[in-house]
Length: 294
Image 1 (tube, rainbow, N blue to C red):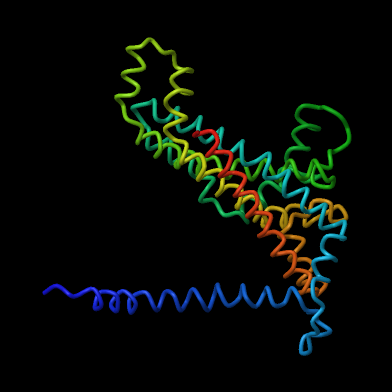
Image 2 (image 1 turned 45 degrees about the vertical axis):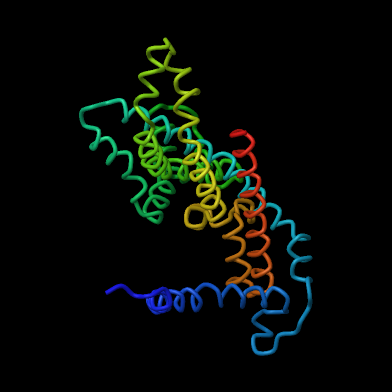
């Protein structure tokens, strides 16, 4: 027997209510609470009595040189790792799409870094790039190049490059899967028509393949940018912000201010600055893609 529309709505409401309740308790309410904290003097000394200070926390954030250092590091991380992950992932997807044998094997091998724990990968990279690590041993003792070990993780930019190398290596497999699925959806008739017209491989790629997977490119671009702004584990385990907080990212600096100095109001304000920045970047990304489509 079919139920009327009102009954359907009631059933849907009952079925969705547990999920909505959990979402509200663990997501909506904490966000509202965090927004409330960002306008109060909320630290370890005022844990039980918070005074309203307006936008002072936001002013402190923007005047903090370490915030701008961590913000710059995060932007650089996103600018470098996001295009590299997408480009290398797309290349691997195209190569795998073009082979007939052992396609599944190659997909598994390229996806292994994705399912590798960030903690394990970060510790392995730290062992490799440490001052007394494997890479310096190989350079000094095997290749006999130089007598002094290179401080890969003890300088700002060399440390960031190691972190970005890890982030790129970890993300290629995810992009490979996403783009491989998109390539499977491109109509084969388009390639056949292109071949009959005498189009070369490069022209076919830019005229057929790229336009056909534009929605996937936008999806990957936005998701990877969000992921880049959330980089934390690799920085925490490999450099821990050293030297002198110069390799901090937004999340590691937020964590430090909250749980090392107890400035929860500052961290709450920083989290909303980060969210607003991501929203602006997402709007910019959608506008870029929509302009290209027009």
